[in-house]
Image 1 (cartoon, rainbow, N blue to C red):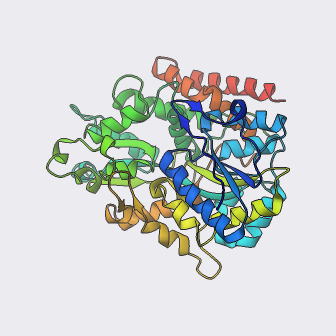
Image 2 (tube, rainbow, N blue to C red):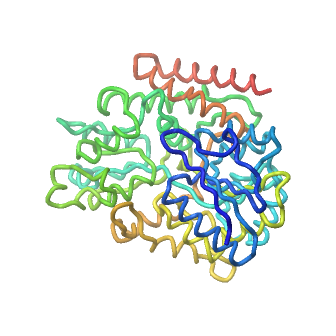
Image 3 (cartoon, one colour):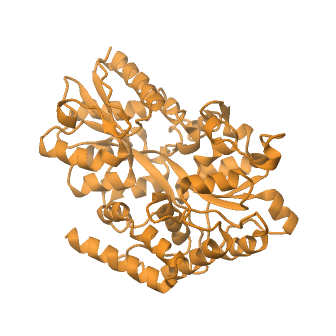
Amino acid sequence: MAAISLSVVLGGALLTACGGTPQQGPGLVVWTLENLPDRFQATERLTQRFTEQTGIPVDLVAIDENQFSQLVMSSAAAGKLPDVIGALPLTSTWQLAGNELLDTAASQEVVQALGPGTFSGRALELTRDGDRQLAVPSDGWAQILVYRKDLFAAAGLAPPDTYDRITEAARRLNQGEMSGISMATAANDAATGQAFEGLAVGNGCELVGDDGAVALDSGPCRNTFQFVGDVAGNYAPPGAQDIDSTRATYFAGRSAMIVWSSFLLDELGGLRDDALPACPECTADPEFLARNSGVVSAIAGPDSAEPAQYGELTSWTVQVGAKREEAKKLVEFMMGEQAYPEWLAMAPEGKIPARRGTAAEPDKFTRAWESLPAGVDTKRPLAEIYPPETIAALRESPERFSRWGFEQGQGVLVGATAGEMPVPKAVDAMLGGSTPGDAAGEAAEEIRSIQTSLR
């Protein structure tokens, strides 16, 4: 049996040995950013099973994402990097790559062993830098636009999958206590940047061009700022909105649309007691809001011929200096038939599989994912709550994930800008009175300054 050590973040404190730096043990040292107690325990069960089958001990450590950057750099300086990291977001993956802390050949070998064709092609692209496979993509969550199907049908409105349709619906449904749309706009909320980027990529707005030059003040980006300023400034609740207030507004039945992540869906379905729908109709019919909500996964703006969708992708990485062969075995196990479905089962609404199946059964894992119970206090498969078209849109979303900067090799810049939040600050300033053009220009200049500091 593996000796498992737990370092869980409680109240913002990282409880680790020796001043906060995880120590190398006799077996594999594995960091996981799935640090919530129930998810850590699920990972622990899987690593224990791995040890029972292989005899390779695992020292499992839970890491808070907000402290990851500082912790990994201090560990690298001390020569005490973990062997494997799991549930690593794209920005963190690219940060490690930029600091040459990834064994990219090991990741490539794992992908080859599992079969490149069994993965989402888009997921592999987002975790690849030229011919280097930086990480083994595992799963992700999708940004979605959820809307009131009943209100749209009554008003004769088409699903809000373009800028024009979103604007028209927000304008017409913004009546009385009903806001047309609810989306994050607070300057200090990462959800504001995520919402903006999700709308931006659908309009051909990129953070940087193919030449690496900052492009946030381009025509498509200025038009995205204009669009956000229009709908959020005229048809959303007054004041700065954050991830919690937007959900509360939609759940209270006081918003016709909401931009959120797919993590909304279990809560919308009444599966989490501390975030239940509270619309007037929900008292007698708890599933009213879920039944009357539609989901748009990809949005198109006027400057783009194709719709696109924002999403976050998490991966497994092997670090330089790792116990290489043992580390590869662990990642292959976690992405294989014995462990992968259980990994996805931690939170199916936010763990959409990036590995679709096996060579023998190409859709094995996506089929399993559809039947996994979601929720916290109540457990039900999402497919029992939402129609097949919604489940299909979620299932296929990793193939549409579009993100700023990664394809241009600017993942380190993306990570740095996420910390400084230039786009959320620009959105907040625009809604406070600056013009969309000024907002785009100010955000672009701040990002250029960040880019210069990284050279």
